[in-house]
View 1 (cartoon, rainbow, N blue to C red):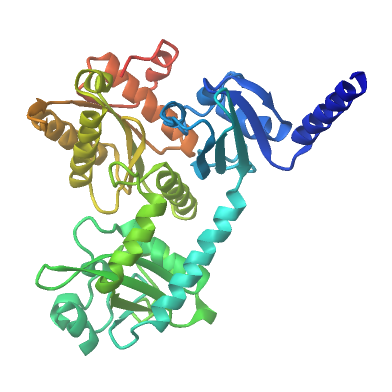
View 2: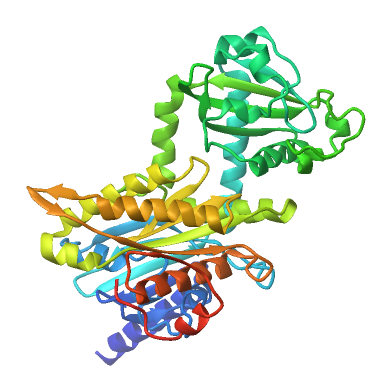
Amino acid sequence: MATALQDIAEEYEALVQFLYLAPVGLVQANLDGEIAMINPLSAQLLIPLSPDGNLSNLFQVLQTVAPDLRHLVESCTAPHGMLCDGVRIPLAGSSAARPQQPTMLSLTLLKLDQQRLMAVVNDITQQVARERLLQQNEAWLNAIMVGVTEYALVRLDHGGRIHDWNASIGRITGFSEEAVVGQPFSVFYPDGGTTVDRIADRLREADESGWSLDEGWRLKADGSRFWGSAMITPLDLRNAQGPAASACVDTPQAADAAAPAYSLVIRDITDKREASESQRKAIACDHLTGIGNRRSFFEAAELEFLRGKRLPRKLSLLMLDLDHFKRVNDGHGHPAGDAVLRDFAALLTASFREVDVVCRLGGEEFAVLMPSADLAQAQAGAERLRQRAEMHAVVVDGVTIRYTVSGGIAMVDSDAADLDTLMKRADMALYAAKAEGRNRVAHWRPTDAARADTPTAQP
C-alpha cells in the first residue's frame, strides 16, 4: 500500500514538473476562475494584463481582453468539454519601451469536470503576422489571375491623380474623361471611403512592396456602388522613391511630377463579395452585432500607428459605453439586452465614415478608430451618434426600451504616441463623461488623470 501511494506521489510530482516546464502556457482554475496552478510561461504572458500583478483569478486577469469568459463558463451545463478553442485575444500594440511585448494571444479553455478548468495560453503574434502576409500574397495573385478581362486600367501621377482616360474606365465605372482626369483616384470611392492620408499610404505601400491592394465599395458615375478591388503598382519599380508623402497636395514637385508613375487596376468583384465577406466576418466581426470585434480593432490600430510613424497624421479614438446597461438586462432579460446592442451597433455604423473602424470590444463597450480625424471631427461624429441613440428606441415583445450612451475621445499627440496611452486617455474621458451625468461625450483633458484614481462609475 505504501509503495502504491509513493508511486502515485511520484507520478503526480512528475506531472506537475511537466506542467511547469511545458512549452505552452497552462493554467488550472476552478469554475469561479480562482487559479490553483499556473506555469511560468502563462505567468509571463498574463502578468502584463494585471496592473497590480495579481494572478489569483483567471477571469479578472482577462476581464479587459475577454470580458465574456466568465459568462461562457457559467452558461456551460455539460459536465466536461471544450469551452473555446484557440480564441484569439488581441492585446494593445507594443510601444517603443516594450518592442517585444506580445500583441496576440491564443486561448483554449477546457472544462475538466464540475470543479476544474484548464486554460492553454500561447503567444501567436508572429503566427498572425505570417498569416497576414500570406493573405496579402493570396489576394495579389487573385487580383492578377481572376477575371483579367473585366478591369479598369488607370495611370496615376506621383501624387495619385488620374493621368489619362481610356475606354476601360468608362466600361467599368461609367466616368468620362472630363470627370476624372486630374482628380485623385479617390473619385472612384464613395464619400468617406478614403482620406488624403490613406491615398498617400497606398502609394507609399506600392513603392515599398511593389504593389498595394484593397477591397471595398467603389463608386460609379451614376452614384451607384459596386464591390471592387483596387491594386496599385509603380510603373518603374527600379526608380520607386516614395514621393507619396505629398499625395494630392498642391506642393511644388519635380518637373516630371505629373508624368505617369503608377498603374491602378480596378476590378468589379461584386459576384465574389458574398464569399469574401463571409470569410471576413468569421474572422473579424463580432458574432452578436456584426460590426468589428476586438481582433479587428487592434489589428486596425496597429496598422494606423505603423502608417503614422511613416507619415504623421491625425488619429482619434472614441470609446463608448451604454449607460446603465445592466438595468436593461435585469429589467427586460438578456435577449432584450442583445437587441439593444444590435440596434446601437447599427446606429454606430450609420454615424461614421466608411474609413472609420467601428468595433465592439465586449459587453456594452464599443470603440471607433478615426483615421485623419482631429478632435473637432471626432466630437461631431460622437455627438451625432449620442443624439441618435437618445432619440431612438428598441421595441422587444411589445415593450419600448430607450437607452443613452456616454463617450470619451482622445487624439494622438507627442505625449500619446502609442495605442496603450491613447486608449487610457479615451477611457479617462469616458469616465469623466459618466461622472458628469452620462448621456454625453467628453474629450481627454490632463485633469482627467486625477479622476482616474477614484473608483470607476458604474455602467
